[in-house]
Amino acid sequence: MSSNVGQNYPYTSETEADRSAAIASLVKTRDGLAAKLAAETTPLDANERWWVWKCPTTGCPGLLHVGGYAAEKHAVYVVCDGTCGKTFLR
Ligand SMILES: [Zn+2]
Image (cartoon, rainbow, N blue to C red; front, side):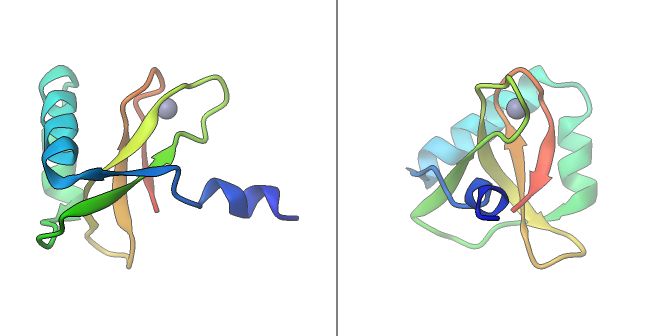
């Protein structure tokens, strides 16, 4: 019952500088990610720290960094920095 819920708890947090650096390097290395973020997210508010989640993909060691607010939902749009390369809403 609680195992699904557990995945949605943040794993750690990072500074805005770390978050923006992580997203910037992901955008550089992944084709189409910049366009996806531009189309599906709205810009973030100024915050000093952001949550980081563990990637829920089986076998993926990645962490999920906040890329923006989801355009149509009340959620943050996160990008995996690991092998699966997926995006999620949190
Ligand atoms: Zn992943």
